[in-house]
Length: 203
Image (cartoon, rainbow, N blue to C red; front, side):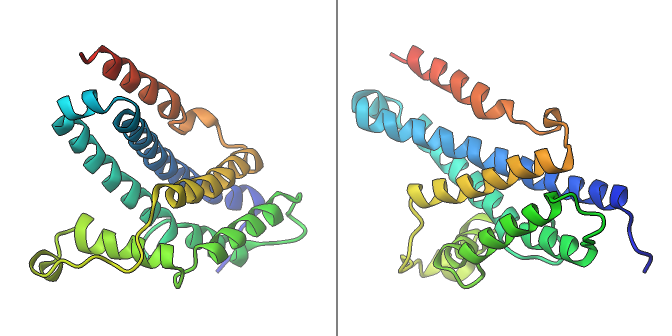
């Protein structure tokens, strides 16, 4: 296999980083919607109850988006672009002579995330369980004999996962010279603001 030159490595890494970044934005936008709804539930229970079907449907859809997005980033799959895939590609093509310090920093950042969210971590095991049993498809055993898992991911843990992934996304955009306009960052602010404007008009 011919050795890749730095522009080739940079291009391939950029494409992988873009895929991860857009999964991050999709999932984190959904998490922000969930936080907004939980705040309404706490601060304005009357409005929440009056429009409970509307809010509960959005919560359901957003939770699925959070699960799928984090799964796409954290759960290893030989056919998918994940953080582990990014790490393997970078390690296999790492060359000290081509590095300006950025590749080394990216590699260190990924390794820290993959240690915290290893395949054996409670978070990733539960994420995979929810995705496989309830989101990607409805598992027959889960449907006929549902059981509450011993460990359940809470909002703070979802937030923490998106925080570290967001740091990696920011680092990769700067290190690889990715045009931020290729990433749907505007969703993080605009969609959330528009949702709040709609909710504020509900009587």
